[in-house]
Amino acid sequence: MSLFKKFIVFTSLCLAFTHAVPLKGLSDTPALAARNRLAKRANPQIGEGIDVNNAQIGGRMKPAFKTAQELLAHAVFSEKGIDTDSPIFTHYFKDDHKDKVKKAMLKLMGNPGSLDDALKGEGAEELGQIAFQGVDTENSDDDAGCAKEGTRMYTEGYDSDKPTVVVCEDSWVFPDKLNCDDLGDKLTDDFATVGHLVLHEYTHWDWLLKEITGGEIVDEHGTLLKSSGYGLENAYKNLDKEDALLNADSYAWYATETMWSVKCKKDFKEPSEEEEEEDSDDEEEEEEEEEDDD
Image (cartoon, rainbow, N blue to C red; front, top):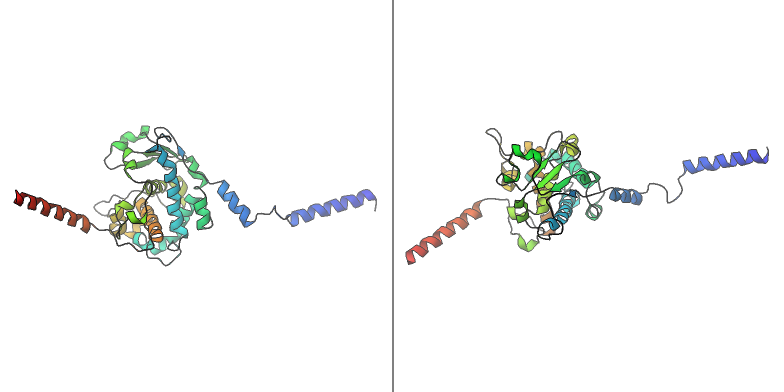
């Protein structure tokens, strides 16, 4: 065999070996895969009407995106998360919803592999296609947009690849951060943050999640034949759990209760209106005493 033919054979063998056994450091190791996932993760865009230089309003938007991811991370990966025997999940869903809820939440996070991984990154790459803005969209005339009483945020184009989330002024009433000292022993609306509202809106994105959930995630306000699932108490106590898989507040409040239960190392009592009624009775008694004094 000539030197030239020997060279050709040797080169072919080297190439075959290279393809058969990847060189160390170039293979798709778990660490590299994790870095690739993080590199592809993103947060939504901040658009018209939200001044990021205003610390009291627009400057709170990016921290809210981070909080939304923290809520999702605890719901899936924490010691009271979806794969544990914690009863929190069944406060809001049927037990057999676990697989779809977990897949939807992982999708919004960009499919991280652990709690630490989820907390380090941003959200799914697709979240970068969402625009959060502070002015009503042109299509909002049909439902009054931010002028509708009680509207904090709403999503337009939820069935498209580039939806818009409108942030109304009522959103900024909610806090950015909480700590366990701010919370009592019972679940209340005070547990909600701006990040909680952001997570609620994420779940409306049918283009991303409908294939997982099998339907559109909506705000279930209730009908003559169906109980409302909008708001903490309705999502927790009143909504038929059969309908929870397609109810946005079920996701947001499940994640919120889970995270604070872990952080505060306690189980919270179920929400109720008893305390509000007691406070009202106390105020009436005080007014009557004042009138008697006069």
